[in-house]
Image 1 (cartoon, one colour):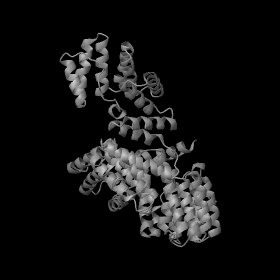
Image 2: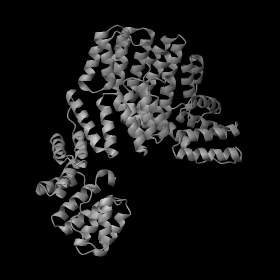
Image 3: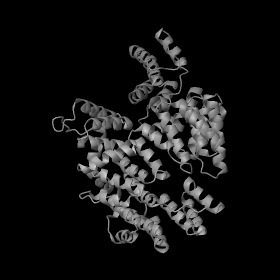
Length: 573
Protein backbone atom coordinates (compact mmCIF):
# COMPACT_ATOMS: atom_id res chain seq x y z
CA UNK A 1 0.00 0.00 0.00
CA UNK A 2 1.38 3.43 -0.90
CA UNK A 3 2.06 6.12 1.70
CA UNK A 4 -0.88 8.14 0.36
CA UNK A 5 -3.33 5.25 0.30
CA UNK A 6 -2.29 3.99 3.72
CA UNK A 7 -3.16 7.28 5.39
CA UNK A 8 -6.44 7.64 3.53
CA UNK A 9 -7.40 4.07 4.35
CA UNK A 10 -6.83 4.67 8.05
CA UNK A 11 -8.68 7.96 7.95
CA UNK A 12 -11.60 6.27 6.22
CA UNK A 13 -12.26 4.31 9.39
CA UNK A 14 -13.53 7.48 11.01
CA UNK A 15 -14.23 9.84 8.13
CA UNK A 16 -17.76 8.64 7.48
CA UNK A 17 -18.99 9.75 10.85
CA UNK A 18 -17.04 13.00 10.72
CA UNK A 19 -18.51 14.02 7.38
CA UNK A 20 -21.99 13.96 8.89
CA UNK A 21 -20.96 17.09 10.73
CA UNK A 22 -21.63 19.06 7.61
CA UNK A 23 -24.19 17.09 5.75
CA UNK A 24 -26.09 15.58 8.63
CA UNK A 25 -26.65 11.88 9.16
CA UNK A 26 -28.75 10.51 6.33
CA UNK A 27 -30.59 8.16 8.67
CA UNK A 28 -31.66 10.61 11.38
CA UNK A 29 -35.37 10.20 12.10
CA UNK A 30 -37.35 12.41 14.44
CA UNK A 31 -39.12 9.39 15.84
CA UNK A 32 -35.85 7.73 16.97
CA UNK A 33 -34.87 10.54 19.29
CA UNK A 34 -37.33 13.36 18.79
CA UNK A 35 -35.67 16.64 19.75
CA UNK A 36 -38.89 18.55 19.31
CA UNK A 37 -39.97 20.77 16.46
CA UNK A 38 -37.77 23.77 17.27
CA UNK A 39 -34.70 21.65 17.91
CA UNK A 40 -35.28 19.68 14.75
CA UNK A 41 -35.68 22.90 12.76
CA UNK A 42 -32.35 24.15 14.09
CA UNK A 43 -30.84 20.75 13.27
CA UNK A 44 -32.00 21.05 9.65
CA UNK A 45 -30.68 24.61 9.51
CA UNK A 46 -27.35 23.29 10.75
CA UNK A 47 -27.29 20.69 8.01
CA UNK A 48 -28.01 23.36 5.41
CA UNK A 49 -25.33 25.70 6.77
CA UNK A 50 -22.85 22.84 6.72
CA UNK A 51 -23.74 21.95 3.15
CA UNK A 52 -23.13 25.61 2.29
CA UNK A 53 -19.71 25.32 4.00
CA UNK A 54 -20.66 27.88 6.63
CA UNK A 55 -18.70 26.47 9.57
CA UNK A 56 -19.78 29.11 12.09
CA UNK A 57 -23.42 28.94 11.02
CA UNK A 58 -23.51 25.15 11.26
CA UNK A 59 -21.96 25.24 14.73
CA UNK A 60 -24.44 27.89 15.91
CA UNK A 61 -27.49 26.05 14.61
CA UNK A 62 -26.42 22.68 15.99
CA UNK A 63 -25.67 24.32 19.33
CA UNK A 64 -29.13 25.90 19.33
CA UNK A 65 -30.70 22.53 18.64
CA UNK A 66 -28.68 20.95 21.43
CA UNK A 67 -29.63 23.72 23.88
CA UNK A 68 -33.26 22.88 23.19
CA UNK A 69 -32.69 19.19 23.87
CA UNK A 70 -29.71 18.46 26.10
CA UNK A 71 -30.62 14.78 26.21
CA UNK A 72 -29.83 14.25 22.54
CA UNK A 73 -26.50 12.47 21.97
CA UNK A 74 -26.90 13.07 18.23
CA UNK A 75 -27.13 16.82 18.72
CA UNK A 76 -24.22 16.82 21.17
CA UNK A 77 -22.06 14.99 18.63
CA UNK A 78 -23.06 17.35 15.80
CA UNK A 79 -22.43 20.36 18.02
CA UNK A 80 -19.02 19.01 18.98
CA UNK A 81 -17.83 18.26 15.45
CA UNK A 82 -19.14 21.48 13.94
CA UNK A 83 -17.66 23.51 16.81
CA UNK A 84 -14.27 21.91 16.24
CA UNK A 85 -14.45 22.79 12.54
CA UNK A 86 -15.37 26.39 13.33
CA UNK A 87 -12.67 26.72 16.00
CA UNK A 88 -14.98 27.32 18.97
CA UNK A 89 -12.91 25.64 21.68
CA UNK A 90 -15.23 26.26 24.63
CA UNK A 91 -18.29 24.87 22.88
CA UNK A 92 -16.34 21.96 21.42
CA UNK A 93 -15.15 20.98 24.91
CA UNK A 94 -18.60 21.32 26.48
CA UNK A 95 -20.41 19.29 23.82
CA UNK A 96 -17.48 16.92 23.42
CA UNK A 97 -17.78 15.83 27.04
CA UNK A 98 -21.42 14.88 26.51
CA UNK A 99 -20.66 13.18 23.22
CA UNK A 100 -17.79 11.18 24.75
CA UNK A 101 -19.96 10.03 27.64
CA UNK A 102 -22.66 8.94 25.19
CA UNK A 103 -20.31 6.71 23.23
CA UNK A 104 -18.76 9.06 20.65
CA UNK A 105 -19.06 7.01 17.46
CA UNK A 106 -16.04 8.68 15.83
CA UNK A 107 -13.87 8.59 19.00
CA UNK A 108 -12.77 12.09 18.06
CA UNK A 109 -14.28 13.74 21.13
CA UNK A 110 -12.05 11.79 23.48
CA UNK A 111 -8.94 12.70 21.50
CA UNK A 112 -9.87 16.36 21.35
CA UNK A 113 -10.66 16.46 25.06
CA UNK A 114 -7.29 14.84 25.79
CA UNK A 115 -5.55 17.51 23.73
CA UNK A 116 -7.52 20.17 25.59
CA UNK A 117 -6.54 18.66 28.94
CA UNK A 118 -2.86 18.65 27.99
CA UNK A 119 -3.16 22.27 26.86
CA UNK A 120 -4.59 23.12 30.29
CA UNK A 121 -1.88 21.12 32.09
CA UNK A 122 -4.32 18.52 33.42
CA UNK A 123 -2.32 15.49 32.37
CA UNK A 124 -4.19 12.97 34.54
CA UNK A 125 -7.47 13.94 32.86
CA UNK A 126 -5.80 13.58 29.47
CA UNK A 127 -4.64 10.07 30.32
CA UNK A 128 -8.13 9.18 31.49
CA UNK A 129 -9.67 10.49 28.25
CA UNK A 130 -7.29 8.28 26.27
CA UNK A 131 -8.34 5.05 28.01
CA UNK A 132 -11.00 4.45 25.32
CA UNK A 133 -10.98 1.17 23.43
CA UNK A 134 -11.66 0.54 19.73
CA UNK A 135 -10.14 3.75 18.52
CA UNK A 136 -9.11 2.41 15.14
CA UNK A 137 -5.50 2.38 13.83
CA UNK A 138 -5.07 6.06 13.00
CA UNK A 139 -6.78 7.35 16.14
CA UNK A 140 -4.85 4.84 18.23
CA UNK A 141 -1.59 6.19 16.85
CA UNK A 142 -2.67 9.75 17.69
CA UNK A 143 -3.77 8.60 21.13
CA UNK A 144 -0.36 6.99 21.75
CA UNK A 145 1.39 10.24 20.89
CA UNK A 146 -0.87 12.19 23.27
CA UNK A 147 -0.60 9.52 25.96
CA UNK A 148 3.19 9.83 25.93
CA UNK A 149 2.92 13.55 26.61
CA UNK A 150 0.33 13.02 29.33
CA UNK A 151 2.84 10.71 31.05
CA UNK A 152 5.67 13.18 30.49
CA UNK A 153 3.58 15.96 31.99
CA UNK A 154 3.04 13.87 35.10
CA UNK A 155 6.79 13.34 35.50
CA UNK A 156 6.85 9.86 33.99
CA UNK A 157 8.81 10.66 30.84
CA UNK A 158 10.73 7.38 31.22
CA UNK A 159 7.69 5.24 30.45
CA UNK A 160 6.81 7.50 27.52
CA UNK A 161 10.33 7.11 26.12
CA UNK A 162 10.24 3.36 26.66
CA UNK A 163 6.97 3.02 24.76
CA UNK A 164 8.23 5.21 21.92
CA UNK A 165 11.47 3.26 21.71
CA UNK A 166 10.02 -0.23 21.81
CA UNK A 167 6.70 0.05 20.00
CA UNK A 168 6.39 -0.82 16.33
CA UNK A 169 4.16 0.93 13.83
CA UNK A 170 3.40 0.49 10.12
CA UNK A 171 5.92 2.02 7.74
CA UNK A 172 3.84 5.10 6.92
CA UNK A 173 3.88 6.15 10.59
CA UNK A 174 7.51 5.30 11.36
CA UNK A 175 8.85 8.79 10.64
CA UNK A 176 6.40 10.37 13.08
CA UNK A 177 7.32 7.89 15.79
CA UNK A 178 11.01 8.70 15.23
CA UNK A 179 10.28 12.38 15.72
CA UNK A 180 8.25 11.55 18.85
CA UNK A 181 11.35 9.84 20.27
CA UNK A 182 13.44 12.90 19.51
CA UNK A 183 10.94 15.27 21.10
CA UNK A 184 10.57 13.14 24.22
CA UNK A 185 14.35 12.78 24.65
CA UNK A 186 14.69 16.54 24.11
CA UNK A 187 12.08 17.19 26.81
CA UNK A 188 13.80 14.72 29.17
CA UNK A 189 17.16 16.41 28.71
CA UNK A 190 18.72 13.34 27.11
CA UNK A 191 20.72 15.31 24.58
CA UNK A 192 22.67 12.44 23.02
CA UNK A 193 19.56 10.35 22.41
CA UNK A 194 17.65 13.42 21.19
CA UNK A 195 20.42 14.34 18.75
CA UNK A 196 20.49 10.86 17.24
CA UNK A 197 16.71 10.71 16.96
CA UNK A 198 16.49 14.18 15.38
CA UNK A 199 19.08 13.16 12.79
CA UNK A 200 17.07 10.04 11.99
CA UNK A 201 13.87 12.09 11.80
CA UNK A 202 15.46 14.53 9.35
CA UNK A 203 16.37 11.61 7.10
CA UNK A 204 12.95 9.95 7.31
CA UNK A 205 10.42 12.76 7.56
CA UNK A 206 8.23 13.70 4.58
CA UNK A 207 8.14 17.21 6.09
CA UNK A 208 11.86 17.95 6.04
CA UNK A 209 11.55 21.68 6.60
CA UNK A 210 9.61 21.21 9.84
CA UNK A 211 12.03 18.59 11.14
CA UNK A 212 15.05 20.73 10.22
CA UNK A 213 13.51 23.60 12.18
CA UNK A 214 12.91 21.42 15.25
CA UNK A 215 16.42 19.94 15.12
CA UNK A 216 17.93 23.39 14.60
CA UNK A 217 16.13 24.77 17.64
CA UNK A 218 17.42 21.82 19.68
CA UNK A 219 20.99 22.51 18.55
CA UNK A 220 20.68 26.18 19.46
CA UNK A 221 19.33 25.29 22.92
CA UNK A 222 22.39 23.04 23.29
CA UNK A 223 24.59 26.07 22.45
CA UNK A 224 25.73 24.32 19.26
CA UNK A 225 25.30 27.39 17.08
CA UNK A 226 27.80 26.35 14.39
CA UNK A 227 26.11 22.96 14.02
CA UNK A 228 22.72 24.65 13.69
CA UNK A 229 24.00 27.02 11.00
CA UNK A 230 25.57 24.11 9.12
CA UNK A 231 22.24 22.24 9.32
CA UNK A 232 20.36 25.24 7.93
CA UNK A 233 22.96 25.77 5.20
CA UNK A 234 22.65 22.17 4.08
CA UNK A 235 18.91 22.54 3.71
CA UNK A 236 19.14 25.92 1.98
CA UNK A 237 21.51 24.55 -0.64
CA UNK A 238 18.58 22.44 -1.79
CA UNK A 239 15.83 24.98 -1.04
CA UNK A 240 17.50 28.40 -1.29
CA UNK A 241 14.26 30.40 -1.28
CA UNK A 242 12.66 28.80 1.80
CA UNK A 243 11.76 31.72 4.01
CA UNK A 244 11.43 30.17 7.49
CA UNK A 245 14.78 28.34 7.49
CA UNK A 246 16.46 31.39 5.95
CA UNK A 247 15.19 33.49 8.84
CA UNK A 248 16.28 30.90 11.41
CA UNK A 249 19.74 30.87 9.84
CA UNK A 250 19.94 34.67 9.93
CA UNK A 251 18.94 34.83 13.59
CA UNK A 252 21.42 32.10 14.49
CA UNK A 253 24.26 33.85 12.68
CA UNK A 254 23.54 37.44 13.70
CA UNK A 255 22.27 37.15 17.28
CA UNK A 256 22.89 35.17 20.43
CA UNK A 257 19.19 34.42 20.77
CA UNK A 258 18.32 30.98 22.15
CA UNK A 259 14.91 29.49 21.29
CA UNK A 260 12.78 28.87 24.39
CA UNK A 261 12.25 25.28 25.45
CA UNK A 262 8.77 24.13 24.43
CA UNK A 263 6.21 23.20 27.06
CA UNK A 264 4.65 19.75 27.21
CA UNK A 265 1.68 21.00 25.24
CA UNK A 266 3.92 22.64 22.62
CA UNK A 267 5.98 19.47 22.24
CA UNK A 268 2.76 17.50 21.82
CA UNK A 269 1.60 19.89 19.09
CA UNK A 270 4.80 19.29 17.16
CA UNK A 271 4.37 15.54 17.53
CA UNK A 272 0.80 15.66 16.18
CA UNK A 273 1.66 18.01 13.35
CA UNK A 274 3.25 15.36 11.13
CA UNK A 275 0.42 12.82 10.90
CA UNK A 276 -2.17 15.61 10.84
CA UNK A 277 -0.32 17.32 7.99
CA UNK A 278 0.01 14.03 6.12
CA UNK A 279 -3.74 13.50 6.22
CA UNK A 280 -4.41 17.11 5.19
CA UNK A 281 -2.02 16.85 2.24
CA UNK A 282 -3.60 13.66 0.94
CA UNK A 283 -7.33 14.19 1.42
CA UNK A 284 -9.42 17.37 1.36
CA UNK A 285 -11.99 16.25 3.90
CA UNK A 286 -13.40 17.74 7.09
CA UNK A 287 -11.58 15.11 9.10
CA UNK A 288 -8.22 16.64 8.21
CA UNK A 289 -9.40 19.90 9.76
CA UNK A 290 -10.34 18.14 13.01
CA UNK A 291 -6.82 16.80 13.62
CA UNK A 292 -5.26 20.15 12.76
CA UNK A 293 -7.64 21.80 15.23
CA UNK A 294 -6.32 19.40 17.87
CA UNK A 295 -2.79 20.52 17.03
CA UNK A 296 -3.90 24.14 17.25
CA UNK A 297 -5.49 23.52 20.64
CA UNK A 298 -2.14 22.23 21.92
CA UNK A 299 -0.28 25.30 20.62
CA UNK A 300 -2.23 28.09 19.00
CA UNK A 301 0.99 29.96 18.11
CA UNK A 302 2.64 27.17 16.12
CA UNK A 303 2.73 28.89 12.73
CA UNK A 304 3.27 25.85 10.44
CA UNK A 305 0.16 24.22 11.86
CA UNK A 306 -1.96 27.37 11.61
CA UNK A 307 -0.95 27.95 7.98
CA UNK A 308 -1.75 24.35 7.08
CA UNK A 309 -5.06 24.56 8.93
CA UNK A 310 -6.02 27.69 7.01
CA UNK A 311 -5.20 26.00 3.72
CA UNK A 312 -7.18 22.91 4.66
CA UNK A 313 -10.19 25.03 5.59
CA UNK A 314 -9.88 26.84 2.27
CA UNK A 315 -9.68 23.62 0.24
CA UNK A 316 -12.70 22.25 2.10
CA UNK A 317 -14.74 25.32 1.19
CA UNK A 318 -14.94 26.91 4.65
CA UNK A 319 -13.83 30.29 3.37
CA UNK A 320 -14.66 32.59 6.29
CA UNK A 321 -13.00 30.21 8.74
CA UNK A 322 -9.95 30.05 6.45
CA UNK A 323 -9.67 33.85 6.32
CA UNK A 324 -9.90 34.08 10.12
CA UNK A 325 -7.20 31.43 10.45
CA UNK A 326 -4.85 33.13 7.99
CA UNK A 327 -5.29 36.26 10.11
CA UNK A 328 -4.23 34.29 13.20
CA UNK A 329 -0.76 33.40 11.83
CA UNK A 330 1.72 35.09 14.19
CA UNK A 331 4.48 37.47 13.14
CA UNK A 332 7.49 35.73 11.67
CA UNK A 333 8.54 34.01 8.45
CA UNK A 334 5.13 32.38 7.92
CA UNK A 335 3.19 35.63 8.22
CA UNK A 336 3.93 37.01 4.74
CA UNK A 337 2.92 33.90 2.74
CA UNK A 338 -0.18 33.60 4.94
CA UNK A 339 -1.15 37.19 4.17
CA UNK A 340 -0.63 36.55 0.47
CA UNK A 341 -2.78 33.40 0.56
CA UNK A 342 -5.47 35.36 2.39
CA UNK A 343 -5.35 38.15 -0.21
CA UNK A 344 -5.79 35.72 -3.08
CA UNK A 345 -8.59 33.93 -1.30
CA UNK A 346 -10.37 37.23 -0.78
CA UNK A 347 -9.92 38.15 -4.45
CA UNK A 348 -11.23 34.76 -5.57
CA UNK A 349 -14.39 35.44 -3.56
CA UNK A 350 -15.00 38.53 -5.71
CA UNK A 351 -13.68 41.03 -3.16
CA UNK A 352 -11.04 42.36 -5.54
CA UNK A 353 -10.92 45.94 -4.26
CA UNK A 354 -10.38 45.00 -0.59
CA UNK A 355 -7.82 42.43 -1.71
CA UNK A 356 -6.01 45.03 -3.79
CA UNK A 357 -5.96 47.46 -0.87
CA UNK A 358 -4.54 44.77 1.42
CA UNK A 359 -1.92 43.92 -1.22
CA UNK A 360 -1.03 47.61 -1.42
CA UNK A 361 -0.49 47.77 2.35
CA UNK A 362 1.55 44.58 2.24
CA UNK A 363 3.71 46.00 -0.56
CA UNK A 364 4.49 49.12 1.48
CA UNK A 365 5.29 47.08 4.62
CA UNK A 366 7.55 44.48 3.00
CA UNK A 367 10.37 44.72 0.48
CA UNK A 368 10.05 40.99 -0.32
CA UNK A 369 9.55 40.05 -3.95
CA UNK A 370 6.45 38.03 -2.99
CA UNK A 371 4.75 41.21 -1.74
CA UNK A 372 5.69 43.01 -4.95
CA UNK A 373 4.32 40.24 -7.13
CA UNK A 374 0.95 39.84 -5.42
CA UNK A 375 0.45 43.60 -5.64
CA UNK A 376 1.41 43.64 -9.33
CA UNK A 377 -0.86 40.67 -10.09
CA UNK A 378 -3.87 42.32 -8.47
CA UNK A 379 -3.15 45.65 -10.16
CA UNK A 380 -3.15 43.80 -13.48
CA UNK A 381 -6.34 41.92 -12.57
CA UNK A 382 -7.95 45.28 -11.71
CA UNK A 383 -6.99 46.84 -15.04
CA UNK A 384 -4.35 49.17 -13.54
CA UNK A 385 -1.82 48.09 -16.14
CA UNK A 386 0.59 51.02 -16.04
CA UNK A 387 1.24 50.66 -12.32
CA UNK A 388 1.30 46.87 -12.64
CA UNK A 389 4.11 47.11 -15.20
CA UNK A 390 6.06 49.36 -12.84
CA UNK A 391 5.74 46.94 -9.92
CA UNK A 392 6.60 43.94 -12.11
CA UNK A 393 9.77 45.78 -13.10
CA UNK A 394 10.64 46.22 -9.42
CA UNK A 395 9.98 42.53 -8.75
CA UNK A 396 12.10 41.41 -11.70
CA UNK A 397 14.94 43.64 -10.51
CA UNK A 398 14.62 42.25 -6.98
CA UNK A 399 14.70 38.67 -8.26
CA UNK A 400 17.76 39.37 -10.37
CA UNK A 401 19.55 41.08 -7.47
CA UNK A 402 18.86 38.06 -5.27
CA UNK A 403 20.20 35.65 -7.88
CA UNK A 404 16.86 33.93 -8.43
CA UNK A 405 16.30 31.77 -11.48
CA UNK A 406 14.44 33.77 -14.17
CA UNK A 407 10.72 33.02 -14.24
CA UNK A 408 8.89 33.36 -17.55
CA UNK A 409 5.60 34.27 -15.88
CA UNK A 410 6.66 37.71 -14.73
CA UNK A 411 7.96 38.72 -18.15
CA UNK A 412 4.69 37.49 -19.58
CA UNK A 413 2.58 39.41 -17.06
CA UNK A 414 4.60 42.57 -17.60
CA UNK A 415 4.26 42.09 -21.35
CA UNK A 416 0.48 42.00 -20.99
CA UNK A 417 0.62 45.17 -18.89
CA UNK A 418 2.76 46.90 -21.53
CA UNK A 419 0.49 45.73 -24.35
CA UNK A 420 -2.60 46.99 -22.57
CA UNK A 421 -1.00 50.43 -22.20
CA UNK A 422 0.04 50.67 -25.89
CA UNK A 423 3.76 50.08 -25.31
CA UNK A 424 4.08 47.39 -27.94
CA UNK A 425 7.85 47.40 -28.39
CA UNK A 426 8.35 46.75 -24.65
CA UNK A 427 5.58 44.15 -24.63
CA UNK A 428 7.03 42.30 -27.63
CA UNK A 429 10.46 42.19 -26.00
CA UNK A 430 9.00 40.72 -22.81
CA UNK A 431 6.98 38.13 -24.71
CA UNK A 432 10.19 37.06 -26.44
CA UNK A 433 12.06 36.97 -23.11
CA UNK A 434 9.36 34.73 -21.63
CA UNK A 435 9.71 32.33 -24.56
CA UNK A 436 13.49 32.30 -24.30
CA UNK A 437 13.12 31.15 -20.69
CA UNK A 438 10.36 28.62 -21.40
CA UNK A 439 9.76 28.04 -25.15
CA UNK A 440 6.67 25.83 -24.84
CA UNK A 441 4.31 28.00 -22.82
CA UNK A 442 1.01 27.87 -24.67
CA UNK A 443 -0.32 31.12 -23.20
CA UNK A 444 2.73 33.11 -24.30
CA UNK A 445 2.82 31.54 -27.76
CA UNK A 446 -0.88 32.27 -28.16
CA UNK A 447 -0.79 35.87 -26.94
CA UNK A 448 2.24 36.93 -28.98
CA UNK A 449 1.06 35.05 -32.05
CA UNK A 450 -2.39 36.58 -31.87
CA UNK A 451 -1.04 40.08 -31.40
CA UNK A 452 1.12 39.67 -34.48
CA UNK A 453 -1.91 38.44 -36.43
CA UNK A 454 -4.11 41.41 -35.57
CA UNK A 455 -1.19 43.81 -36.11
CA UNK A 456 -0.37 42.23 -39.48
CA UNK A 457 3.20 41.43 -38.43
CA UNK A 458 5.26 38.25 -38.78
CA UNK A 459 2.19 36.36 -39.97
CA UNK A 460 3.95 33.11 -40.86
CA UNK A 461 5.77 32.95 -37.51
CA UNK A 462 2.59 33.98 -35.68
CA UNK A 463 0.64 31.19 -37.36
CA UNK A 464 3.26 28.63 -36.32
CA UNK A 465 3.17 29.93 -32.74
CA UNK A 466 -0.59 29.69 -32.48
CA UNK A 467 -0.63 26.22 -34.01
CA UNK A 468 1.98 25.14 -31.46
CA UNK A 469 -0.09 26.66 -28.64
CA UNK A 470 -3.15 24.72 -29.84
CA UNK A 471 -1.12 21.49 -29.89
CA UNK A 472 0.01 22.13 -26.31
CA UNK A 473 -3.46 23.13 -25.03
CA UNK A 474 -6.03 21.63 -27.42
CA UNK A 475 -9.00 22.20 -25.10
CA UNK A 476 -8.51 25.90 -24.36
CA UNK A 477 -11.21 27.93 -26.09
CA UNK A 478 -9.25 31.18 -26.24
CA UNK A 479 -6.30 29.46 -27.95
CA UNK A 480 -8.54 27.74 -30.50
CA UNK A 481 -10.11 31.15 -31.08
CA UNK A 482 -6.69 32.58 -31.91
CA UNK A 483 -6.05 29.75 -34.38
CA UNK A 484 -9.45 30.22 -35.97
CA UNK A 485 -8.95 33.95 -36.25
CA UNK A 486 -5.48 33.49 -37.74
CA UNK A 487 -7.13 31.38 -40.48
CA UNK A 488 -9.78 34.10 -40.89
CA UNK A 489 -7.16 36.81 -41.38
CA UNK A 490 -5.46 34.66 -44.01
CA UNK A 491 -8.77 34.15 -45.82
CA UNK A 492 -9.10 30.46 -44.86
CA UNK A 493 -12.74 30.89 -43.84
CA UNK A 494 -13.71 27.21 -43.80
CA UNK A 495 -10.78 26.44 -41.50
CA UNK A 496 -11.68 29.48 -39.42
CA UNK A 497 -15.21 28.11 -38.90
CA UNK A 498 -13.80 24.69 -37.99
CA UNK A 499 -11.61 26.00 -35.17
CA UNK A 500 -13.97 28.74 -33.98
CA UNK A 501 -16.81 26.24 -33.58
CA UNK A 502 -14.51 24.18 -31.36
CA UNK A 503 -13.55 27.31 -29.44
CA UNK A 504 -17.21 28.13 -28.75
CA UNK A 505 -17.82 24.59 -27.52
CA UNK A 506 -15.05 24.95 -24.94
CA UNK A 507 -15.85 28.58 -24.04
CA UNK A 508 -19.52 29.23 -24.82
CA UNK A 509 -19.74 32.33 -22.61
CA UNK A 510 -16.88 34.26 -24.26
CA UNK A 511 -18.25 37.23 -26.24
CA UNK A 512 -15.14 37.63 -28.41
CA UNK A 513 -15.24 34.03 -29.60
CA UNK A 514 -18.94 34.20 -30.45
CA UNK A 515 -18.27 37.47 -32.28
CA UNK A 516 -15.47 35.86 -34.30
CA UNK A 517 -17.58 32.81 -35.15
CA UNK A 518 -20.38 35.07 -36.40
CA UNK A 519 -17.97 36.82 -38.76
CA UNK A 520 -16.60 33.49 -40.00
CA UNK A 521 -20.13 32.17 -40.63
CA UNK A 522 -20.90 35.29 -42.65
CA UNK A 523 -17.86 34.78 -44.86
CA UNK A 524 -18.94 31.20 -45.77
CA UNK A 525 -22.51 32.23 -46.55
CA UNK A 526 -24.16 31.12 -43.29
CA UNK A 527 -25.77 34.50 -42.60
CA UNK A 528 -28.59 33.28 -40.35
CA UNK A 529 -26.13 31.52 -38.05
CA UNK A 530 -23.89 34.58 -38.16
CA UNK A 531 -26.68 36.80 -36.88
CA UNK A 532 -27.41 34.30 -34.10
CA UNK A 533 -23.78 34.38 -32.95
CA UNK A 534 -23.66 38.19 -33.03
CA UNK A 535 -26.89 38.42 -31.06
CA UNK A 536 -25.55 35.91 -28.55
CA UNK A 537 -22.28 37.83 -28.22
CA UNK A 538 -24.28 40.95 -27.32
CA UNK A 539 -25.82 39.12 -24.35
CA UNK A 540 -22.40 38.11 -22.97
CA UNK A 541 -21.21 41.55 -21.82
CA UNK A 542 -18.81 42.48 -24.62
CA UNK A 543 -16.62 45.56 -24.24
CA UNK A 544 -17.75 48.85 -25.78
CA UNK A 545 -15.81 48.51 -29.05
CA UNK A 546 -17.17 45.04 -29.60
CA UNK A 547 -20.69 46.14 -28.72
CA UNK A 548 -20.55 48.89 -31.35
CA UNK A 549 -19.26 46.45 -33.98
CA UNK A 550 -21.92 43.89 -33.15
CA UNK A 551 -24.71 46.47 -33.36
CA UNK A 552 -23.41 47.60 -36.74
CA UNK A 553 -23.41 44.04 -38.09
CA UNK A 554 -26.92 43.43 -36.87
CA UNK A 555 -27.96 46.68 -38.54
CA UNK A 556 -26.68 45.41 -41.89
CA UNK A 557 -22.98 46.23 -42.04
CA UNK A 558 -20.94 43.43 -43.55
CA UNK A 559 -17.99 42.23 -41.45
CA UNK A 560 -14.45 43.10 -42.27
CA UNK A 561 -11.49 42.09 -40.11
CA UNK A 562 -12.76 43.58 -36.84
CA UNK A 563 -10.65 45.21 -34.15
CA UNK A 564 -11.94 42.92 -31.42
CA UNK A 565 -10.33 42.33 -28.09
CA UNK A 566 -7.99 39.39 -27.53
CA UNK A 567 -9.97 36.43 -26.15
CA UNK A 568 -7.81 35.95 -23.09
CA UNK A 569 -7.77 33.08 -20.66
CA UNK A 570 -9.57 35.02 -17.94
CA UNK A 571 -12.58 35.56 -20.23
CA UNK A 572 -13.04 31.93 -21.15
CA UNK A 573 -12.39 29.93 -17.99
